Image (cartoon, rainbow, N blue to C red; front, side, top):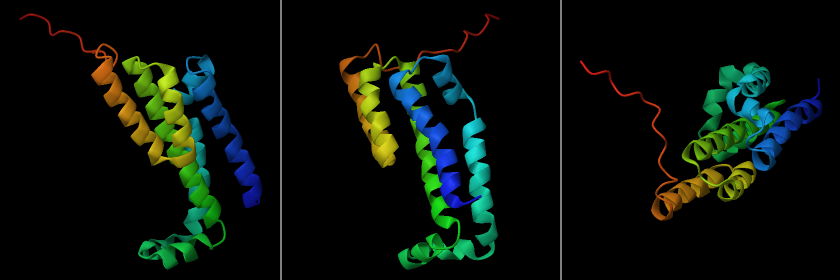
Length: 155
């Protein structure tokens, strides 16, 4: 299968996951995206098929920018790079949404963080850290994670 076909196949479910996290954060579909590892595992498997043929010499290719550029020009490696972004940004988005829901942070404050994570990866997580800090400062009842620990039985 061509890299373009793989790109289309992998983009669709991830884009649907992002849409679910932004527009329908508490639905059964979104819950599946948050709790299931199927999508990240499938993406990881495709990633491995693209990277594996280059593994013997690939690790030495990441010491300089010209080497990284050359590595990304190898067959399948540009797609592998995109898959890497796709998977990790999506995983970070899942962490942001799940954490925000646990903390009770209003979804409207989380949406910009999700969009930034989708478009700019780590910038979205940085924005979410700022939202967490702000909610802790201005909405103290919202910010802490509720304790799920059971009290120890009296001896």
